[in-house]
Length: 79
Image (cartoon, rainbow, N blue to C red; front, side, top):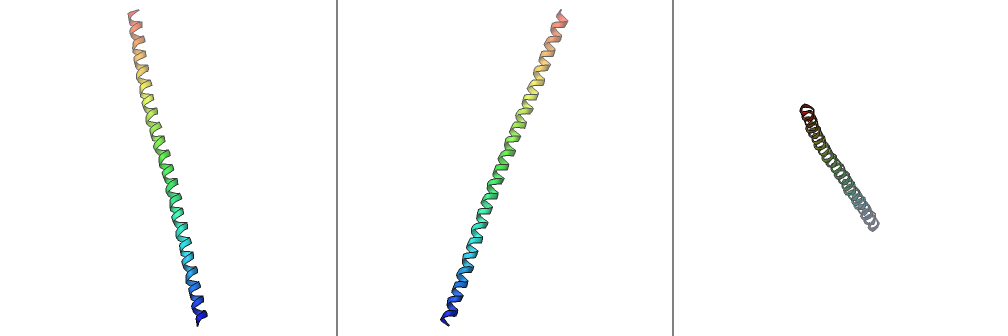
């Protein structure tokens, strides 16, 4: 009878150990996924910032070209 309890306690111990290992693996997996997701979000935000900056530069370029062309036309009309 004592041996049966020993086997039962060992089985319960092994089950608890396995559940603990599974829980630790699950927590680590969630942490890794969260870290990767955060990295992807940061990359997307950086790309958005670069796209906005590019759009601003494009608008500035177009504005400067319009001003330059207008100035050239004024010089031509004065000549």
